[in-house]
Image: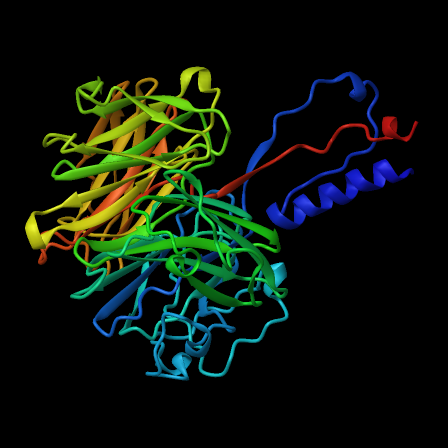
Length: 525
């Protein structure tokens, strides 16, 4: 057996470790001439999530909600846990003050079910007192935990077996007053090596951080590039930032450059290792929220779920290419695609951040922006900042260009009165099944199927579990091949204006595994 054959067997074995399935069969006559077989979609067996440090405000109240959808074919055993990043502490955090040198002892929650760690976390022992913030429930049952004040650290989450497919964790923080006041929500994300954040700022009224979290045993080395209206901004310490193993590093954007600009695109590139990354955008007057990463640069983007009562919408776009892009701007409204008067196109100069105020573009109806470059020739990233309320009661949130829902998407921490789902099908009519789980305190799951007409955005009155107590999860499953995009808006009912929006990409519940039943002997020649 030569080296090529050995490499293929090793690759199939690696797939088996991730999915629990891969097969190598004996040679079969004529197999070399057979067409490639379709990959099977199988439940993942291991996954990891990273949650950034939520806040340093004494007035912050943070809720974590965990949920794993029931997935056919998933293993019966397994476990999941969320633990503080063991390398994170107040001494290492430029946001923190001297209020505490032992933040782990402040974390609330109970011990989680024991589950195996990911490969990069297997040898790390949590610090004494580093308790999990919640105990994840079994598949189909959401679980919640909370932390008060500004002592909550970044979190590293792992899930295995039946807990892994589609595992979703939401971090929601209410800040009653001060810079960034409002409702700040973010979906905890897996580690990666590159992120784009159009919509950040180094302006005087903004305090924006890039939060970097490293889940692995070795240090990660990260570069942060900033691009303003005239191109790349000169940065002083943006290159070669070291994020220690199992630790978090919040980086204040205004410390990277002396240039004060309203609209900045942040590019996070990992030289070695991998990290989770999110931007926390805090405004002195307009509240604050998390800015998730945009979908990868593309010639066609969808920004789903601008609330119907948005009072102002600001679009920020950037292309990493040297060539300019003339984007066609359309709004997918409940009645179809509309070209907004006065904003038919947006000219984006190569390597420069471009922003435009779209005003109250939705005019009382939920909508989604659809951006298209001619022939898709110039890739672009984009996001919108959305304002609700008026005067000193304004609050802000961000919607980046989103990935499609894919096989299934999951949103957690929902309530019947505070949750709105927006689903758009820009290129064809689609059907979507929405299922509400039981609540954190009980209830009976409920499902309903919706038809989304081509080119429209539908505000869905999602089903609620019968007899629900507490918050619940919503899963979206497209029942047609037409791509759909979705977002979930949470509104804090008692505040009136506090809100946050999260796009809903595929929840990574399954992985494609090619069938390894072909004759490998032909490769020995």
